[in-house]
Length: 242
Image (cartoon, rainbow, N blue to C red; front, top):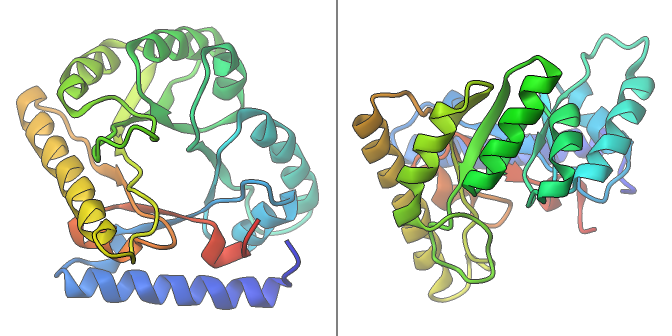
């Protein structure tokens, strides 16, 4: 990352303007959509910039990278008025990294199997605190993406709701790359709409609030916001290419 803080703030304002325009076009309140800066492969200073700008949380793809970067970020922010950001895991979680993930992250967006539910619940119980999670669904049926299948989501949700140390807050999905390419935008739109429909159906069926829909990245956030996203995960548009 070789941009100064002023340039980062300029980029945040540009992304926020995109979010606001997309929300208003969809008849939504822009305040319903949260911008989550993705600091993957960038130094701890990237998270510091997000905290200084008041964004509140950052997303990381790899458990060990987040575990190393979180204390570095706290040290860099020592003495500043900006509070340390919350940390969210948005990348695939392997079973052998569950304990470290539960220790490091405030929320895990990539829970996609009942096995992970059991491991995370046990780790959170041993740590003595509840752990917020999102269930990752492969709503676009993309063989290159992680996430449970749409038809398996009810069973996964049931397992997660029964886990006493997990707090299920909603769902996450990743659309196909290249949302501006011919045909891909429509696939992304269907992916986001499928997750929104699934969330609405399961919230009614289970009688629970599932407010969070983590959908959309730098290239497709407008489509995601139009479909009901409450959290867009943006890295490249804020920090540049990795």
